[in-house]
Length: 121
Image 1 (cartoon, rainbow, N blue to C red):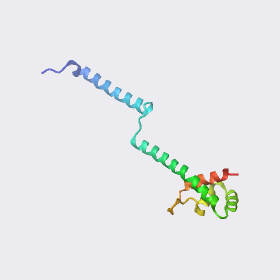
Image 2: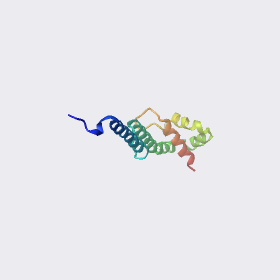
Image 3: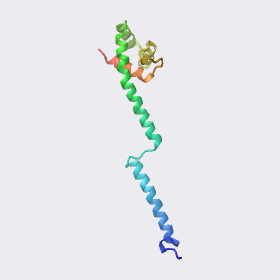
């Protein structure tokens, strides 16, 4: 049985080169403009969005806890005296970032809470 002329000699070489160039072009176009992503990139994006959503949900609760504390006015004055980069730890030490039933704190929530409190009048 004889092989087709496309699969013989120089033609086979050109066919394989064309297939390879087509594959590379498809990958470049797909990843750059087609919206394709790797699983690791998609997971990283999902984690970032989830953390942002958690901070957005818990920061207002932190502000509310802060405002309902017995000495909220004095604490707010003390917070504003504290340097910006230490305000998050001030909020954490006060215990206002703890979610209901949780003993752990999240520094992102504390920082967002401090920013929201500084924006209050």
